[in-house]
Length: 538
Figure: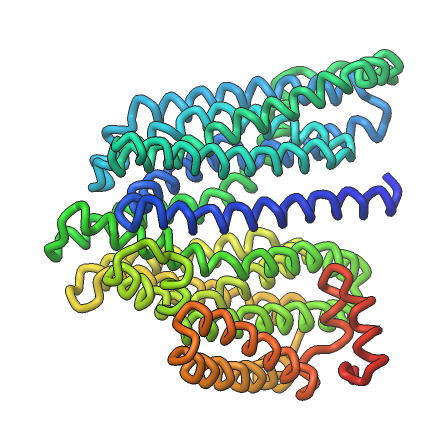
């Protein structure tokens, strides 16, 4: 595969991934306005179970398919590549049937154990998704192995559009028919199943359209000894199992989190409905906003892995230091202002976005967001440090560190959520501590393996100074404008003024450099323009 084709494929997947993440993050805002904190609590109770089942049945196999198919095709063994795909497809289909059946027939038992029986419809509606998504994943892995990223990108976007559109439409219809919040939450969940169906339909259609070309390749395939099925399965599992373990950590602890938070809130006197409402405020409202900055930190991580990997292969530790330092600094340049902005404007932002919810719900969600906002710093930092370690071939280290953080989270959430004065905020605090632990351990590993000594002035102190300037501007602007133009407009104006003041503070303090811009799409061109007008000094 040529470098140009590789970059084209990476760009296609990056654009699709960006659109999917934006749609996914935006989806929960109208949803929370339609079904409120209690309804979103039912939805969010079911979703971690789905993501866990999906990770267990699917996570590592598409990567294994892509790798093995690519290897076979590179030596002209197109027949062998097709055989890998067929065996993997059957395995994923079996996994899909098993996990889908487990959720469908075990839904009542699961929601009972999670102490949120009204989440039954939300969970059972996700069962078909667990059947369709493995099918879709098999085809995605196959096309990626053929170095063709377009089918994956198209199916991802179609899947998400169908999920958002059908999910919200079903919620509106069910509420209109007065079917109640539990069933409306089920409608929202069914969006994932509809998305899986349409995503599968699209990628199967693309495969059928290209089958003639694939068959032609198979007919001119080089003669190779036919691999037995057990060897192919073993090769798939060798690649897939470590990835599956890593991908299952967050969903596993997310599922445990649901059970602990719901149970502990009820232990201190909340009813099941009230506990579901508080859990909805935490995960469906506050957490949704925390996820927005990840769109950028994930993109940075995607740029860091190949850059670090190339430098590490050459043992160029000077280049590793420059790239890793820049990656960490850019991550903080995104995480710090996002955290402080969400902290200062927590309640106004909640009122702006979740306007249809009662005032007491908005105030409660605002207070949760104020606490949870600090997790943005460490969550984005974990993602970039993980990418750096992956680039150096140390992929297991961040997984281990995340497990350590998650184990600490389980203990802390159990203790704090059961204290009446803290309640659901204990879950937010435990999230922050978990990511603090994981980011500290990752940072220590990066220093050890990359042989880096970080410059605190450039990496930490200058970004903090720029954010401090921004925070003062945001607070003053909001307090001045709220009395004149109202809360909603004042919030928007404050965010705008905050963004402008932050950008100028970064440039004036020379916090951001041309190297930092290189990690962002189109960053080199932008840095050259800023240098010409004298706003970028280095």
